[in-house]
Length: 263
Ligand SMILES: NC(=O)c1ccc[n+]([C@@H]2O[C@H](COP(=O)([O-])OP(=O)(O)OC[C@H]3O[C@@H](n4cnc5c(N)ncnc54)[C@H](OP(=O)(O)O)[C@@H]3O)[C@@H](O)[C@H]2O)c1
Image 1: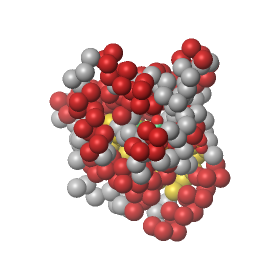
Image 2: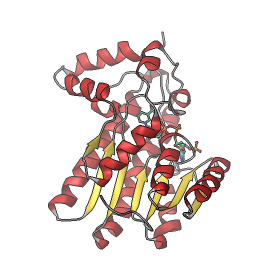
Image 3: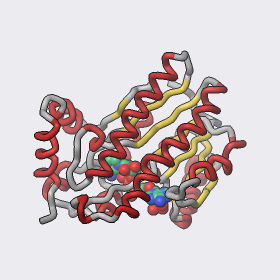
Image 4: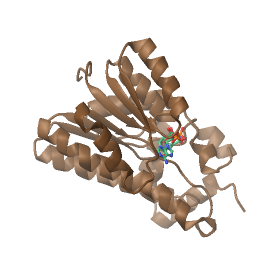
């Protein structure tokens, strides 16, 4: 597997959950990091912890990535840092009936989950392709594989990321580029995600929720092996496999029944 010592990763959404785990895992492998999210205090604590534990360099950039030109601003901040790995992880869900949701709030989520992630990938892939080396991990979701009532727009943003990732990976591979692209597609995981989305910890969520650190480790291992998609946990892979054979309308109804906590 690739030696990452002395290389540098940019991780979005690093202030909690998967992003903080990715930071720990990559620093343990000897990578210097640029970590970004909005909560600067959390990023600074993570920086202090990681620098102390692993002796690598960590730069903090506190930034809201929902701004329409936020991705370009972030790229401008780091373009001279010779980034080797982009972890496009910042994102959140919004749980409710679509008709009760606010279009402006949904637009901000789409901006973060889709537009900023795609723009960062576009800006960085040019550099990685030019040096014929590098890695891009896009955090999608189990929801990318299935229409997901209550997460109708969120699920669609993740379907975008998943299809986009695999298409980009294929272009690079067919052009003989040594740049790996992986879509990370976890199911419910114990981070701040469920609470931020406004979903209750229902019976189904409690029964199916997984731990984030092992899932993040699996994602990085998959990325280093240039796997197209990493879906942690057999239970999720099994469900995703069988959902393929259901008509989409039935698959959506199954999702509705599983995650419903609203009247
Ligand atoms: N946990 C799950 O069940 C699950 C399942 C499938 C996919 N995912 C995906 O995993 C990724 C990470 O989420 P998580 O589960 O680790 O949840 P999390 O703990 O809530 O982490 C989300 C991260 O995104 C950052 N973020 C949110 N809004 C932002 C904004 N406007 N600008 C910049 N950064 C922002 C947050 O930082 P700040 O609040 O400090 O900005 C935080 O670091 C997301 O893309 C999510 O969709 C999660």
